[in-house]
Length: 254
Image (cartoon, rainbow, N blue to C red; front, side):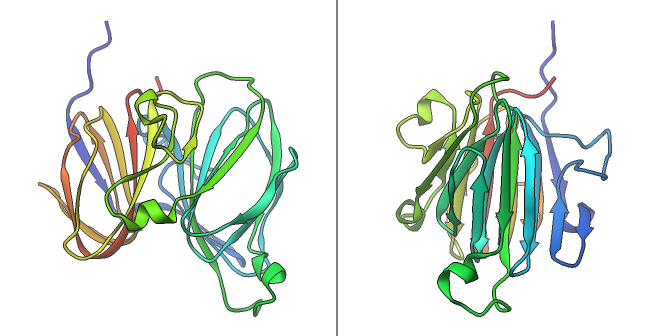
């Protein structure tokens, strides 16, 4: 018999993250990633990757492979050009939910090349985005891609389901992921706005911009995160304009 995990709130500050800084990329990693490895920091719940990336204009990630991973990309500022080996291409921008299922294998690139398409100044607009990875329920499925505009839902306030494989979010989530135990929510909050975190066994709260106060835990600012285990349902209040990303997870990697 596997015992239930003990209740815990683990606050991770922005300056505690792994960092990759090169000429065209400033990347902050919440979990072990690439050459950055800590055996005590590999995931929370089902979430393996939470990378906060800023890419300069005209640069980006060249074509590279993925396999057996559900990858959700959320843009906060600027726009990101996606192309993959299944024939999908497009520009991801704030308010657009995007999911790529790597499945049996997929090649893709992500670049800050939208200025070429839109005839803008190539030196003016970095793109800021968060990319998140969760494991799928089953390996070896066909690769896939989905995106949907959800700006209107965000403007209404509250937590908005961005990507989900859970049955109870089947009709209200923007896009589907192939994990029936996970949902990603997003919210844009003005000063004084409140939301309540989902009551799930595993919750990951990330604050990519702004600041919020979490009930019983204090202030979380830009780049801070909270890993909640068996302690869902806490209230958040924005202390300044903020955007938050919340993973609700009903299972963990064992």
